[in-house]
Length: 73
Image (cartoon, rainbow, N blue to C red; front, side, top):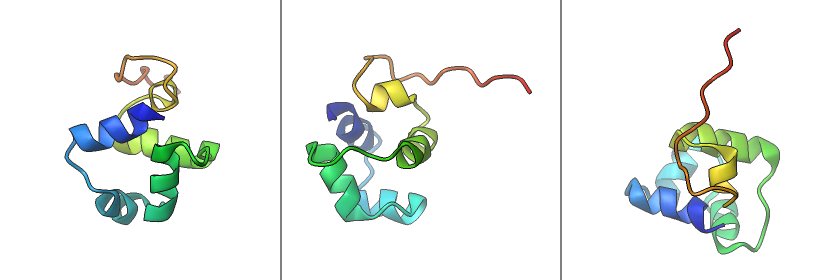
């Protein structure tokens, strides 16, 4: 999951900052970034919202970091 780490580093965030802002533990973030553990859908949604990107980008399915437009309610 190279994009998960890339987006964090590009924004100059530490894993500790992401943990404090999202509530996802630093140890989980580290495992996600190393590819040792797949994030839950819930955590992916939290991280995509936090980084203002798409789930597909975080999962390395696209190189486009721009999020999809929100659906109108």
